Image 1 (tube, one colour):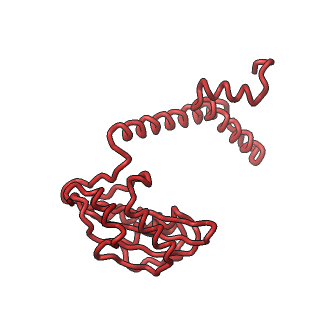
Image 2 (cartoon, helix red, strand yellow; image 1 turned 90 degrees about the vertical axis):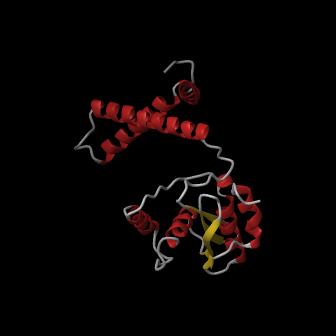
Image 3 (cartoon, helix red, strand yellow; image 1 turned 120 degrees about the vertical axis):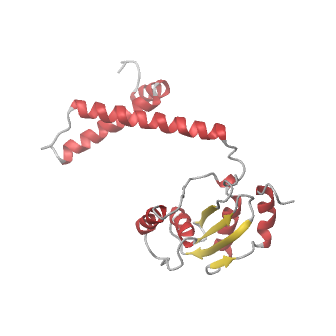
Length: 216
C-alpha cells in the first residue's frame, strides 16, 4: 500500500481501477481469515484462495455480460409477449412497511397479451420475495398453504419446473410488470382475501391495453 494514501483512499483507488478482481480478492481473503479463526485445523492453501478469487471474478464478469446482452436485446420499459401457443405468468408482491400491509398479484396472459386469469390477495406482513413466489405457485396448485416458509415455496417451484412442460422463470423490472404490480398494491391496501379474477379489474384495463399488441 502506498504510504501517502489512507486506507479509505487506497480502497477507492483500487476499486475504481479493478473493481471486480479487487473486491473479490478482499472478500475471499476475509473468508479465509474467518475460516481459520473458526477451523484452524483445516486451513485453506494460497492456491485454493487464488482459485476461488479467479472463479468468482469470472462468474461476475460472465453475469455482467449476460445482463448487458439482455439489456441490448429487450426494451425493459414495457411488457413483452410470450411466443405463440405459450402463456406468460407475471407475479409481484407489494409491501407497505409503515402500514403493516402486504399483498400479491398474479396474471396469466397469452401471446397477444390477452387476459386469461388472475389472482390477488392481501397477506400478513413478511417478505416481498415470498409473496411473489406464492403468487406464482397459486397459479399452478390450488391446495397450497399460505403459511409455508420460503424454502418450501422454492422446493415446490423446482418440482413444477420438472413437470412435462417447458417453463422459464425470470426476474424482471417493475416497469415491465405493471399489471401484477398494480394488483399487488391494490390487494395490500384494500385488504381483501384471496380472489381469482376471470376478467380483469377495471383499474387494470388501461395497463393491459398498453401491453397488448392487438387490443385497440
